[in-house]
Structure formats: structure tokens, C-alpha cells
Image 1 (tube, rainbow, N blue to C red):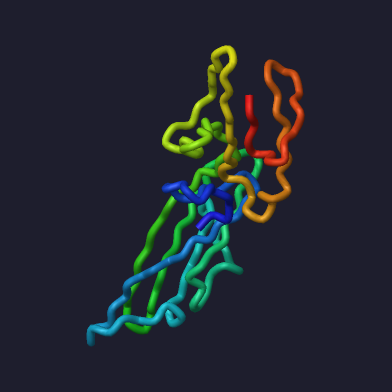
Image 2 (cartoon, one colour):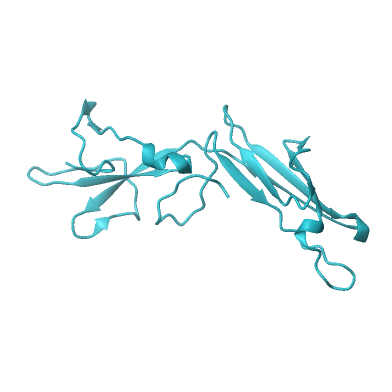
Length: 171
């Protein structure tokens, strides 16, 4: 689970932003010979990030592991081993996470229909005497700072007056 912002309509998962954080959760299914499952807090978890053992992140019941994106952007490989030595059971898994740069996408915002979220666009055309409303949506910014973003609209390099709704502009 990455702690980054995605708009409410977004069907994908939030991605790990540069210098953002995410939590990985191990869900081992270790079953004793009598058919009962070993509770997660009774399992020893050994976490590694880019092949470096995480002493603080490893131990009994430590099924959650924090990951932080860093600059420069590089993939982060995390592995976990879940062991129940009293029962001779071990499971392991590995994943690679690629931090992403935050981005903003533009959408046409129709007066009667609302934003056309099915298609982001980088170009909009307006015929003489007509108007088009453009809306921006931020993706993968740090979740706690989304309300602190400021927007500066420009057309052909020239600044435009800000509106009462900073994430949309009427041309």
C-alpha cells in the first residue's frame, strides 16, 4: 500500500512516489500438521531490502514492512521469509517496486456531462466563439500534501488569472 494520492475515480492502485512511503504486508499461509493455521504474530519474519537485512523490520509478528522511495529513482527489491521453526515451516516471497514521479493529467470538463475521465489529453482545440473547460488531476503526489498543491495555468507560456476552482480553467 503506497501512501500517495489518486483521484477517487482511479481504478488502479496508488504507486510509490519519489521520497514517498509504502507498506508491504506478508500474508503467509503456514499450516500445522493438525490443519490449523499459525497466527501471523507467532511467525518470524525476516525482511531484506535490496539484499540488505533489515534488523529493525524483522522479528516475531513483524508482517508489515515500510519502504521509502529515494532519489535517484531506482527499483527497490524487497524479500521476506516467514518461518515457524517449531513446526519446520518456511515460506518466502520477493517483489520489486519502482518509485514514480508524480504527474498531472488533463481532462476535458463538459458543462452538462462533467469531466471526461475516460480519456486524458495533452491538446485541446477551441473553435472561434466556443469554450472548453479543462480540469487537472494530480496522481501519485504524497498523500498528506495534496491540499497544499498550488496551480499556475499558462497558455503559450503566458500566465492566466487563477480561478476560484484552481484545478479547472475555462478557455
